[in-house]
Image (cartoon, rainbow, N blue to C red; front, side, top):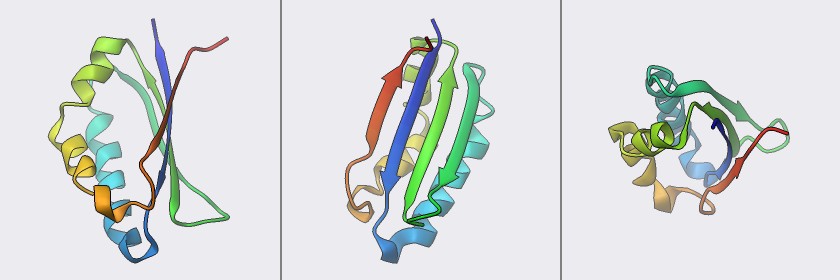
Length: 94
């Protein structure tokens, strides 16, 4: 079963450049993963400190493997530079 994931990430303004760079690297690296069907990063027009990932994964095991990658760990280490913990929404297409 495909997994549809939306993630909302808000950075603290003073870390915008650093966080954006890490997120953009995640896009480049994640798109190389075989279970990744779509991985898009968006930046809010209304608030430049808000980023939204829209992802489609072939299956749960592919997503689980993704979360073990070093570029995801690099993102996790940004914790204190984010304004809030990321909001993650897993869904299925109707």
